Image (cartoon, rainbow, N blue to C red):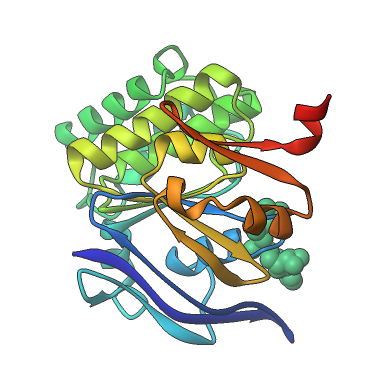
Length: 257
Ligand SMILES: Nc1ncnc2c1ncn2[C@@H]1O[C@H](COP(=O)(O)OP(=O)(O)OP(=O)(O)O)[C@@H](O)[C@H]1O
C-alpha cells in the first residue's frame, strides 16, 4: 500500500529535468521532497498532480495507475497545493475552499460538503475570514486557503509544493503539524516540497533529495542526511548532527561565526 513513482522522465522542450525518478511513499507516510532551486521538485509534484505529463514512467497508488485514471477519479485520490494559485476577484474564502469538494459533489453541495469546508477553514485558522474575498488576503492567508481547499478534498494523497514559503513561523509550524496529523490520524500519504531541511527532519518520516533531476538520497531523515552529500548538492559546506532532538543540519559557516 503506497504511492509509487517509477522511472519518471520529463523535460521542458528539449531540456531534461527529471531523469528516471523512482520513489515510494508508504501509505500514511509524510515524505519531504528536498533539493536546491531547479532540482525538479515542483516538476515532480506537478506530474503526480497531472498538471504535467511525463515523457516516460508511471505513478500509481495502491497499484492503481494514477496517470491513466479518469480525471475525477484522480481528483478523489490526489489533492495538490501549488506554490500559489489564481485568486479570482469575487470569490470568497469559503467559495474557494468549497472548490475542493468538486470531485465529490453531485449537482449541488450537501450539508456534509459545507460541514467539511467549515472544518477545513477552522483547521487552518481562517474562521474569521470565511466571507472575505480572496483578493483581500495576505500572501500567507491565501496560501492557507489553498491548503484548506486540499484538505476539504479529502484526498488519500496530499501533494504540497512549498506550502510554507509565505507563512510566518507560527503558521509554518502549525501547517506542518496539521499535515503530520492528517498522515498519522487519517492515513493520508503526503509529499511536500520544502526547503527547510530541519523542518523536514523534524516533521517528516522520509526525506528524498533531488539533484539535477535525480534522486541522490532517500530514507528516514536521520539516515538520508549525509553531510558530504548535502554539502555537494547545495554547494555549501554543512554539518549534520544527531542528538536526542533528532538530526540537525547547519551551514559550517554559521558555526564558525
Ligand atoms: N515552464 C517551464 N519551462 C521551461 N523550463 C522550466 C519550466 N518550469 C521549470 N523549468 C525548469 O525546470 C527545472 C526544474 O524546475 P522546478 O521548478 O521543478 O525546480 P524546483 O526544484 O521546484 O525549484 P525551486 O526550489 O526553485 O522551486 C529548472 O531548471 C527550471 O528552470
